[in-house]
Length: 422
Image (cartoon, rainbow, N blue to C red; front, side, top):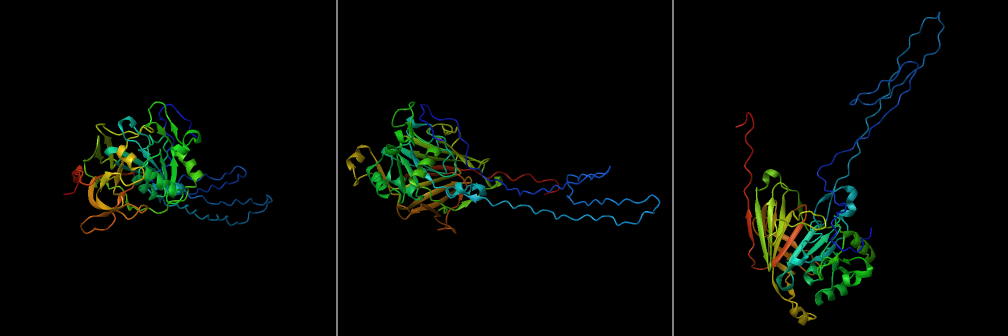
């Protein structure tokens, strides 16, 4: 249902479309066979655990009073075969974050993703949509102050924003999914790529075209520009249909695994990722196997659209070269706005956090449209894909050499021996 322009941040959450399957139960068909009542006799009612059977009732012929009754053969009940249970279709894994979905939700598992650039200045907080995204990228933008790009596939978000301008590296990460990319203008080289490749490697959803009277993005009045542009998954569903960005995404570049057993999860853990005028911290929660996120002193980051905490299953730190954006269209404007360029094509060091542990890895991206891959850096698994836990993936992109601080907690003590055990 189209969302109207509103003067306040949307707060009432819409029903989430993703339903994670924790277990499957086979359904069983139930057969009920009715019997007829004859004279004063009645068919008995089977107990709760008995197997229904078909009972034949024979009505005797009339016999003269003086004639001796003849021997008769008791009627034989005809057995009814036990119905076979209908097998439950297996679940389907989402291509973006590997979360298990019911077979009936297979369309969500391969739904065409869209990506949104989201503001991260203090005036933009708290943001909307970050808790609902399947994948989130955070990287330095103007002068090193970071921005987000959130990718949505399986979950509804009633509000997403504030939406900000594009950067070519965000576009490059969106092309990994041939996503529809939502933004408000942007750097000249990013806009040039979007205009040249719209409908080919990416779909361009610029607010300057699709906001305002078009109605796919709106501006709120409770925040000043440029921190006041919002959209929603409902609006983006409609725009994707209009732009024909509907091809199913059936292949994932990632390898997924289920959550570690509680006995295999460390009792604690923390990560700190610094940016200019910003500081991201994560606290590992062994009960949920998730990393509770906080931004610049806040105890926990909460999504303003759903009031849900931001707590990814995976935190992936990527080291990249970062420098001023030069030798590009509008270079003077880029330098004036302190725009940056990142070495997003190539390879570099990475840290992959999940299940309360850390893996030293290498990332690689062969071209503008190629996926960003994660592989073990060393050891017996060197060169093999690093598996990610099924759930939200948060990429933290930092300049090479940035000091990342983290602590890995110890494993919980083993349970005490039971009766009769040593």
